[in-house]
Image (cartoon, rainbow, N blue to C red):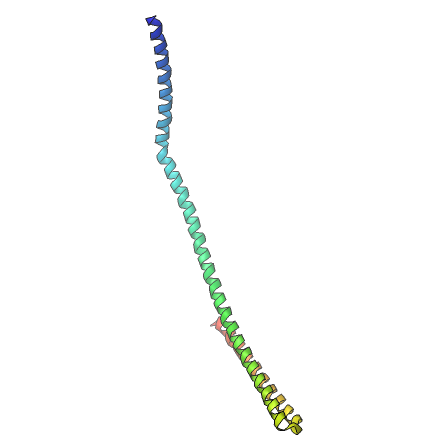
Length: 144
């Protein structure tokens, strides 16, 4: 019976040692490959990081361009609104003047109306000249 126990024990030890060797080889190969796997991961992380940084730089440049464009548009709109406000104030002043003249001298309504028309035409010509010169100036800004 001792001989049977020795044979059974020896078979168990030999199969356990085979499994131990297999598992040991697996761990050894993983341990040996681990630095290479880290290097591959670091390289791919660097490539992704570089790509993302290039995208960020491009987006920052695009944002800066859009902000500049937005600023120029706001300035142009502010100038246009200022011009419109001035024109509205002028028209309102002429209308008030016409009403005042009509109340003071209703019999000369034709004369008052013709004077107001002359003033409006003169202002319209001056405004057209100013708009043309402003357009020419803004066109030359891009050239200089």
